[in-house]
Length: 231
Image 1 (cartoon, one colour):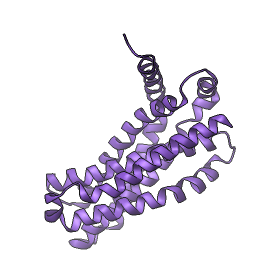
Image 2 (tube, rainbow, N blue to C red):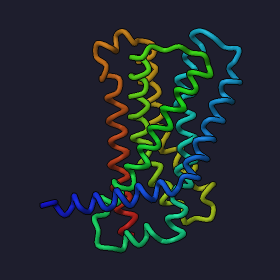
Image 3 (cartoon, helix red, strand yellow):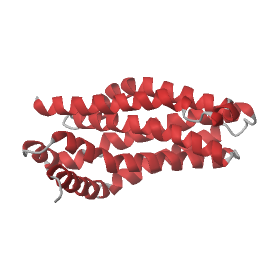
Image 4 (cartoon, rainbow, N blue to C red):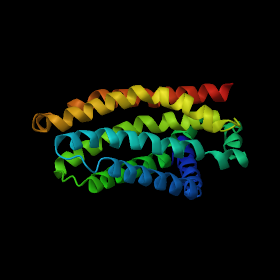
C-alpha cells in the first residue's frame, strides 16, 4: 500500500510538472535571453586567446547562469497567481514542505539543463576545446551551484509576484542573497580549472563547500516558505 505522503508527493509533482510545461513561453524567453548573453560575451572577447580567455570562460559561465535564471524565476509564477492555483494549494490541508519540494523539482531540471546548455554554447562560441573529464567536473560544479540557486530564486519569485514592482523588488532580494553562493562556487570552479590533475585525485573536495552552501540555501528557502505560508 502506498504511503499517503508518497501519494501526495506524486500528485503534487505531476501538477507542478504540467504547470511548468504550461509556462513554455517563459522558459523559451529565458533561454533566448541566455543565448543572447552568450553571443554578446563571445563578441566582446573575440580578441582574447590562451589562458586569459580560459579564465574568463569560467566566470562568464556563472554570470550568464545567474542572470538567465533570474529572468526565469521572476516570471515563472505569474500565471500561478493570476488563477490563484498556488494560493488554493496553500489553503488546502497539505504538507507545505512537499508543495515547495514538488514546485522546485521541475524548475530545477530546467535550470540545470539550460545552464549546462548555455555553458557548452559559450565554450563553442569562444572556440575552447576542453577535455571531457574537465567539462564533466565543471558541469558538476555548475549543477551544484544551480541546486542552491533554484530554491532561492523560487522563494524570491513567490515573495515578489504579488508586488506591482516585481521587476524592481526581485533583483534587490535575489542578487544579494545569491552573491555568497556565486562567489564560493566560482572559486571552487577556478580551483578545478587551474589544478585539474590534482583535483582528479580527489575530485569531490573542491565541490564540498559549494554543496554545503547549496544545501543550506535549500533548507533556508524551505523554512522561509513555511514561514511565509504561516503569515
